[in-house]
Image 1 (spheres, rainbow, N blue to C red):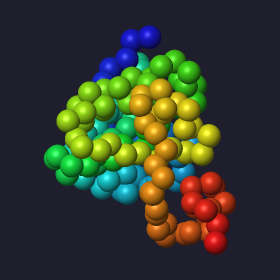
Image 2: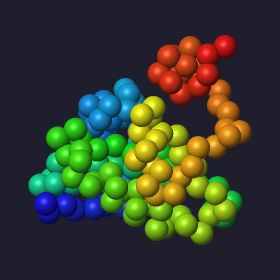
Image 3: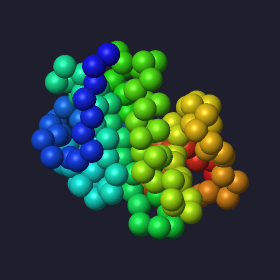
Image 4: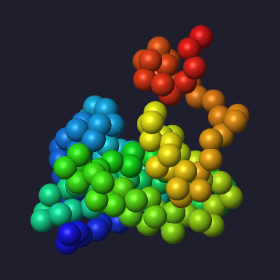
Length: 143
C-alpha cells in the first residue's frame, strides 16, 4: 500500500480529521479543538492513502522529561494493515530520548501498546471533565 506521511499540520483538513476520529472511534473531537491540540503538539503524524487521511497521531512533550503520545487513530477500513504500528514506531523514534513516555490506551487496546514496551502504570491518576462518563468508558475507577 502506497502511503504518504506528513509530520506537520500544514494542509490538514480538520473536518477530515474530525471524521477520522469519530469513526476510529476516538470520540467527537470538533475540528477547531483538533487544530488547537495538534498545533500545540511537538510531534505529529498524518497518514494518507491516495489523498485520503487514514491515520494520525501526536506527541505532546516538554523537550526532555516527559512526552505523552495521544490520539493514535486509524480509519477502520485500514486497521490491521500496520498503519497504527507505524505511527507509534515513528513517534517513538523521535521521542526515545525522553525520561518517560506516557500514553492512555482505549480500554482493550493495552496489548497493542505492550508490544512497544509500554507497561501499565501503578500510580497514574486522572481528573476528567466528565468523571462519570470516563468511568463508564473504562478509563478511571468508579467512586
